[in-house]
Length: 141
Image (cartoon, rainbow, N blue to C red; front, side):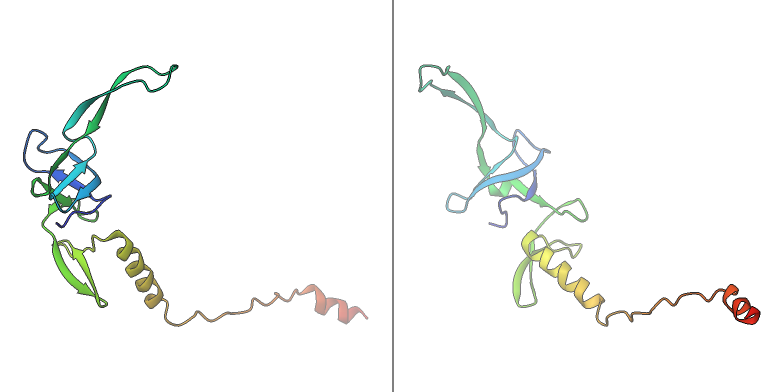
């Protein structure tokens, strides 16, 4: 299963086809995912205390993982997942080349920024500008 929690996905089959949402939960054993706003089910909830009221709650249901595609955050397209080894770590990659694993992409961006700043910039001192009034003061004495 190539879908993880907090991924932005597009539903590609079923009643909610075309809906985008965030993955709330995954179940690899059953090969299902729960997506925010997809397959809404109504659940009757009984009052458990004297001051509560009974109500009907809407909760998202699970759909098969094969019915969703991960949306790439950089190109914005639904894509199939490629796996690649980057710096000795197996990560999920989009066809456009962007890393989909958010935890690893932050580390990769930090390493790239550190590599760009290889040599520290030279510090230069700002010297005070000499005023012309000072030489006139020495001539009068």
